[in-house]
Image 1: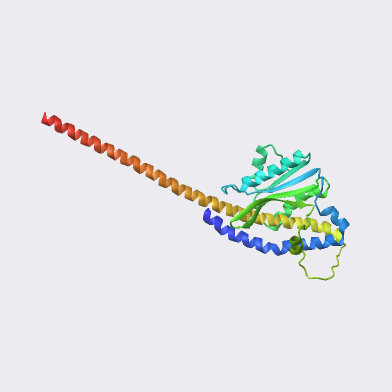
Image 2: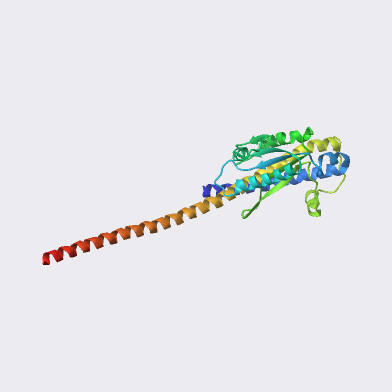
Length: 276
C-alpha cells in the first residue's frame, strides 16, 4: 500500500499543476466582470456580515489507513459548525467521501447530501455534480454562506486543513492575490451578454473550479498521508517482529537452560546413588 500510494502521489500532483491555469483564468474573469458591474458583484461576491444560514462542504477520503487525514477534517468541520450554531445560525452539512456519513451520523449531525466513489481520481464532472447540489440552497436564497473544509496540498511534506469560502465568491484581498488573478494582457474588455448575466453564470463555474481544485489537492494529500501511515505501519511491524523474536529466543534459551540443569541434576543424583 505504501508503494501504491507513492505512485499515485505523482499523478495527483501533475493533475494539480495542469488545473492551475484554468483556475487562475476563471478567477481573473470573475474579477474583471465584478469590476465592470459593482452592483451585480455585490450580490454574488464578497463576505456576508451576518449570515443566518450557513452551508459546510467537507471533503474527506473514501478509505482509512491514512493517519489523521480524515479525522483532521472531521474535527475542523465540527469546530466550524459549533461556532456557527453558537452564533445562532442554521448549519447545513454536505460531504464528499465515504468516511464522512458514518462519522457525522454517529454524532447526531444531519447530512443534506453525501457523495462517494470518486476521491481517488476526481473529474470535473464530479465537481460539477457536487457544486450543483451544494449551491442550490444559496442560489434559491435559503442559505447565505457556503464554506468548504478540506486538506490543502502544499507540498509532499506539507499538508494542512483549511476552510475556504465558496459562496458568495470571495474577492482577492491582498495586492499579491489581485496581481495573481489579474495578470492578463492589458486592453479594453467587452462583455456579451452584460456583466450581470455573465457574473451569474460565472459564479457557478468558478465554484465548480474551486471544488475541483480542492478535490485534486485532497486526493494528493490523502495518498501522501497514506504513504506516510503505511511506512510507519511497516516500520512498527518490523520493530514488533524484532521484539517478539528476542522474547521468543530468550524464552527458548531459558527452556534449554532449564532442561540442561535438570539433566545435570538427574545425572548427579544417579552418580550419588551408585556410589552409595
